[in-house]
Image (cartoon, rainbow, N blue to C red):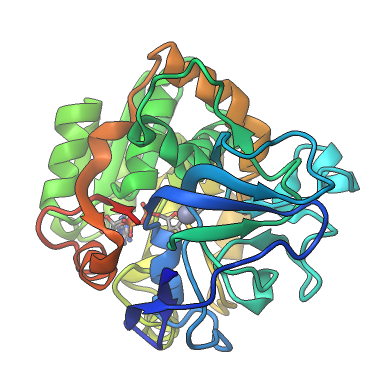
Length: 378
Ligand code: NAD
Ligand code: ZN
């Protein structure tokens, strides 16, 4: 089959690889009909994970039609239309039973973290979903079966695999409530969805920060939020504290490791405490009010010696973070899409065949051609 493979820093190639097959009784094989590229995939191609093997199939935002199931699969059958959550989880362990399946104890035999499709050995070693076919382990739990009477096209549902529940979890976990002022750092796909959910959770003011003009414009025009280009301010955090009368109740960082820098450049910028991801944490630290909450949704992948812990401590700031437990939120958010409570499709700017994946990565990574979110069609 054709699949998107990692071939080194900023190098992905569509290659012929062996078809996946059922390995364990509760596996299923899905024929992928749509699959997206995520900001988390950019961290991989920037070298966040040093031992990332070449030829590894990447991608973790797929949906499709079930082709085959193992004898232990009871919840799903051949021909079902399924959304595949990025978190691979058993459904039985303590974490899965407590709504934190992104930390499943069973699915990752390689490290002290959860398991995710297409995210290297460190996160379980499972091949990813930017491919024609995908092996889904623990299929009874790691799947959402789209009801047969659902007539919604893939594009309305696809992001339930990751960024819709991720964005919702961010505002939920941060405790956004009626009347809050919420600052969202980043106007990529995750930030833009987070802004929608901040409104839905009752925020009275939503302020979005980025430096890419067309993304700020999208946030302003579609999500009706205030926008700030952080490059226009000497100290954007202080500016936010000023215009909010003491700081935001909640700051949600939807940036993480800087989308344009390699892991090495990241460490350098972190040490200089400027620009990039460390920049986002510094902005968050300054923009939040005393006693407020900072939620890290953006992914971080290394240690930061100059992390502003003292500033957070002195101001009683709560800091939360992690990989979103998307399976937990999926049924509710599916229902919200059916009821048209929100529309996730406005962020899609590019629809491309799987064979054009290298180009798709380039425009998403470099923020070119007005790219916000790419959907690949195998
Ligand atoms: P993206 O790269 O498209 O968006 C990031 C945006 O942040 C870009 O528009 C960029 O210009 C902007 N930015 C860069 N530095 C900034 C700064 N200092 N302040 C404000 N904005 C800044 O990526 P995306 O797909 O939107 O994903 C965003 C983040 O969410 C990534 O780190 C991704 O790994 C993470 N993510 C986390 C989870 C989770 O479970 N926690 C799930 C999915 C994605
Ligand atoms: Zn993702």
